[in-house]
Image (cartoon, rainbow, N blue to C red):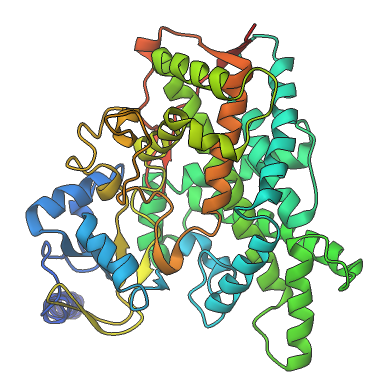
Length: 493
């Protein structure tokens, strides 16, 4: 009898908790955007395909409209889908939605650095970083020269393949890695450098792991899953190893720092840290410097590397597009001069192809999560302070009115009737507003110059019939991960 009484008491307790949870979620939903009814604890996770969350968002937007509410676990999320809603949050209301939503997989970066920082220091660090990066050539001639210099090394390494099949992941990835390493650390790696290959492997692993269903689950149920076995442990270890490297670099720089002659971005951060020590402020600690460097190193390497790798695969599938690019390169640049930024004005087809690659691959489809910094109204709905907001980028890049047949790779999406480059305000692969990617200018320049240099000197050769090339990503989550492949590059005569 006693055991039965205890069992009944536990059942009553559990049912009571369940009812309270349902009531709280329902009550707190008043005046929020519409959305599917959440279950206790799990929320709406069962109504979302963890293998393709962006597709689930699009399906829910058709049902509930461009602004809707989801509960991923107990976390309330408001999703923005479509140009009007996304632009309102990222640009028209950028201050109210400038916070960064929590990403548990990067918990050791929380409230530090640039990308994942939602603490009181993020605005100052971002502002200082943007200014300093600009001084080191972000979007200016200094970076053009860096990329052109690295292009020579890349072409040399490609030539060493002697027309034999190779995996482009690390060979091509070394170029953007070296460009950002030069800016951050005044350092350049050889293409067979073990440390460089290890770092790129960590970046590559993390981008893939972040896009797997398990990490989607972990980022919404980390409190339950943190101590369980799973791939989140590998990702957390990778993040720790990357940060350990940037911390080591920061310490090395600190030992030889000459404030009268800063060598790179790291020196500038350390000088700001020393200055704040004397002023009594604590925004710039060695830990914060290391995380800032890790953020920039990862973002500056992996996103550009993946875009180039995906782009080469796309061009192999469409050899007629590659041939048009060869003709434009031959006409504007010729066989020997290294491509330059000024060439872009005379190369509308290459410019359109680079833009279409970024649009088509939709590298970070759901954007990084934002957070409401205050209670605010959005399209007639209440968005409470602290609510996670997801302004989806794929809803712009795959808008079928702006880009007819968005699922098809068509450079014509960015060309007018006269073959001139056509800008689209829907093109926001780097996001926009207060949290726009700080390396956007550098990435755009790298993609144009490196892709032009590769095609100037080589023909791309697929190991299979171009019609059999599958462009579908192997994972969709934080990013869209391109399939693994090998190719041959044949020197152009």
